[in-house]
Length: 86
Image 1 (tube, rainbow, N blue to C red):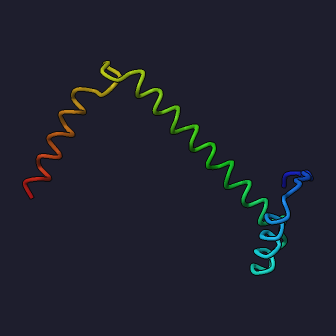
Image 2: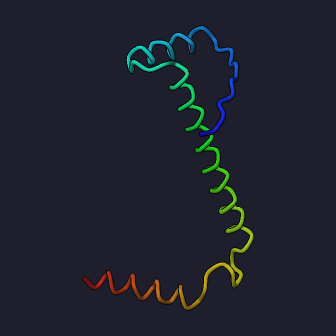
Image 3: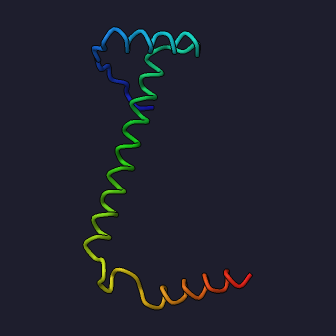
């Protein structure tokens, strides 16, 4: 198990109140809810960075041979046409 570290986060009164209220409703410590929120935010940041990297790569190689393999493109079109026949 990893070592836990304390991290002091001053919160505005309204945010603190909402966090305490949610903690009481869920019958969980506010620190657990805060940790989950931070973990979720970090996960979303990683996903956004990955999407941005993919977008930048796609923009960079657009129209080149790396854009899409001609054989794969033809197979995809063929598959779509077959699906439309149904």
